[in-house]
Image (cartoon, rainbow, N blue to C red; front, side, top):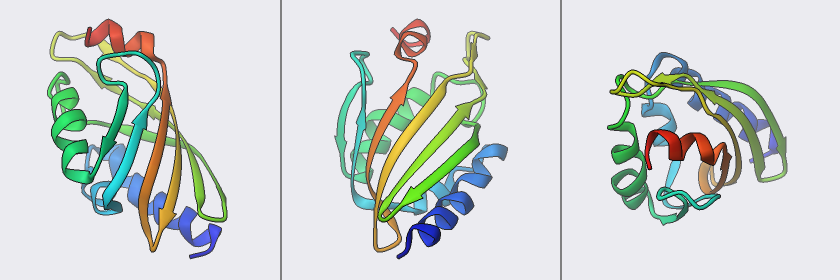
Length: 131
């Protein structure tokens, strides 16, 4: 796929996250996705495979939040098989603490699926709500 096709694919997958619907984003992840969270928090590290990513990162972290995860897209830049996403999470923890983190995902796509992500975020904010 071209850079523009990859960009449009991710725009469409991210749009429903603004209304707390993650299905399209989940569907665009390759089964063998490799997702790396930068930093030194308990959530930092590399998750190999879609099943492990949801089991070990997304489900337990999102369980700390009051509602399903909400994420807004700020910018998408694409070049070849790489797409860079600037995103803002707009959430509240079950303890009532706002969790509004800023993210940068560097994504590699293969055959219309995200096969690799490097996630950059405010790790101090993560550690404050999920030590």
